[in-house]
Image (cartoon, rainbow, N blue to C red):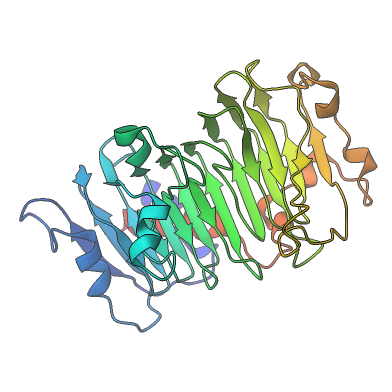
Amino acid sequence: MLRLVILLIFLSFPAMAEPIRLTVALDESADFRSIQAAINSLPNNGQQAIIQLAPGLYQEKLYFTRDKVALMGSGREQTIIKIAELRSNWLKQHPNDWGSAVVNIRASDIALLRLTVQNSYGELTGDNEHQFAIRGFESATRIITDDCAVIAGGADTLSLWNKTDGMYYHRNCYFEGHTDMVCPRGWAFFTNSTFVNKKAYATLWHDGERAESQKLVVRDSHFDGVSGFMLGRRHYDAQFYLINNSYSQNMADKPIFRHTYPNQPERDRANLWGDRNYFSHDNENNAIYPWLKTNLSQHPQSMIATQITARWTFEQRWDPEAELKQLYLLMEQK
């Protein structure tokens, strides 16, 4: 009966060709002993690839330049990808950011599942400047993290930076870092996640200057951190939706704000759409400050909370939740 149910669910989604399946372990029990070696072995033929990671501490940087790759760990406590790298140190010897993160992405349709990605530079040295755990570049879109921990000892932990058509989905995750620890450009949706800010400054940052519909949505999640941590800020046009979240009393009474650069005109560009910060709560006690009170009725389209879904966020151009279901079903069929 269970097999019949799984088959019926699988048939309800568009067909996905049989994927390439590889395994990685730190001993000789798998196809590869290095994650990057497994990625490098993949043919560039557009076929979905699923790479299963055994438990272990993988001390290597990852570079994704091939689309349609899913990394499946054995659990965020069991499968850990960790490197120590400070961005400024990297740039002293390299022309750009490619390689400055633990996970570097110049591809699309990449999924990181049931694992931890950690940049431990700040933990080891006490230096809390910019250090990426995950860095997405201009061509990276449709990136998924599910049941992951994404941790850095400094600013910009999760930096997915495709300004034009970047779309990112994050579910059941733990994020930890310092200033702007989660800082997407384009369209991003987070749900059932925890954000822990180790610095008394902004947690969220968004760049949505390329299109009026670009947005950052966080719903059904929790924010915590050191005393005086702030919810968010922006430099450029941005749009924030905070739906049914809870907030630690450590959070500062500081609304999401615009950081300006009067002496840097190339960064202090004119904002076309102004402040667009929307909130909604199932429990109004979670509006711990007046500026957090529900205001979706002020939205130009008079939105209600149930409309704020992943598919709505991505303007019906991407359904990451259906994609995730397909990936997990494929993994069960191994």
